[in-house]
Image (cartoon, rainbow, N blue to C red):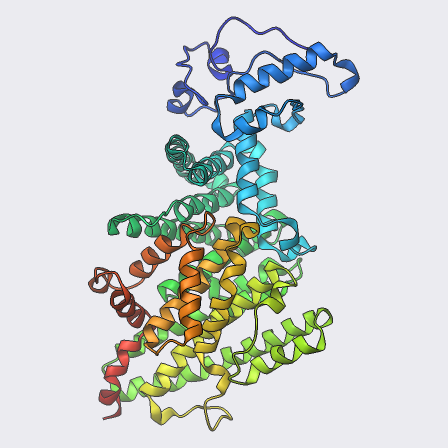
Length: 544
């Protein structure tokens, strides 16, 4: 059944409100200024029946032509509209949204999520599949989430297509989404909704993906800082909701994804957060089994405390107190090391049935030897999410063991503690950075999408920081890997990584080091400050 539209050319929303429409496309200015959802301009078809037997050829042509005319005004879907046999069959829940929104969301998920073979068949083990399903389920009914998703979608599509008008529209939509989020946060009831937490997560994506290595230092600092603020805001929202709120399906999926970002930021800032409290590693899983990734994050959430305590010891003026606190911290480090090794053995055991004998040997050797022959390709064959889990493990090892090595040099009188007469070969951070760097290419290939690039960004930053801080002579393989990383970050999915990591590194150190010039020596100065390597100069004072 086809309805006959009126003579007005205004959008549906302005017509319903009996207001003058400025006819701006794709959304009218009146709706944007008034904070209304613009329902678009298409009016050749009021509604159709989904049963194709009721549609004659003339009706199909009318629908196809009217859809193509509307879509021709939107660059992101012009290609689809040009297809000769395309007919629109909107689903009932999509009738209240514009075709622009629907297509924007579809294209964004195509850009963000890896292809099917990159996600495990058990979607519960994929944080990406989990939280994306929450967004897709909740966005049709919640304007605040739909606005955040639209802002991220339009801006990212614009950057992928180098369309300045789309990028500008994305910025405008981002401002609108921020307004809606702030308004929702003032309502205690809405502030506890899963949709608001999902919206905050998406807003952090906007800042992360819109870094394009700008030349101005202030721009790099600002966008990385805005990402940090969004992640901190999401953390405060989670804390306000309480751990019990995250034991339900939607709340749990959003918590798992947001916790990972919170842990990454806490390690970057070297400051412990509420996430390290026991209840936050227990209550959200009271009715939902933990995945192997969840168990790893339970360990990684303790790393910021190690970093923070180390920084406090570094500033301690009392020698005896510094030594005492150092001994306690070394004990905590060994406990964390034990947790990491147990996790790795469990992880390998779960995958053992998928490996052939020749693959299994180097995986086992990598645990207790200095061997660096392990190839990430072994894990990649099991899926990108599997590789991501072991890359996070290597990242945790890099942060933990680099801190321990500095402690042993700073306090040589502490020796190695526990049952070790010498420092185990597995605690060499350099081999883990090598594993991480070998993995980069898998996350930046086109099939991995933005999600792959996002997953490797933090491990890559940790690895490069360590290499700069250690100031060791690079091998030929290291040099080749660094060059390949520079080339990979020029790809569409990874184009934002360089600028984002630069801004993040500068924001994580004191302002006196932030402004050190670019280049290797500036990067090295900031990396040594972050890792605490500069504190080695104080070791003689401590021993006296």
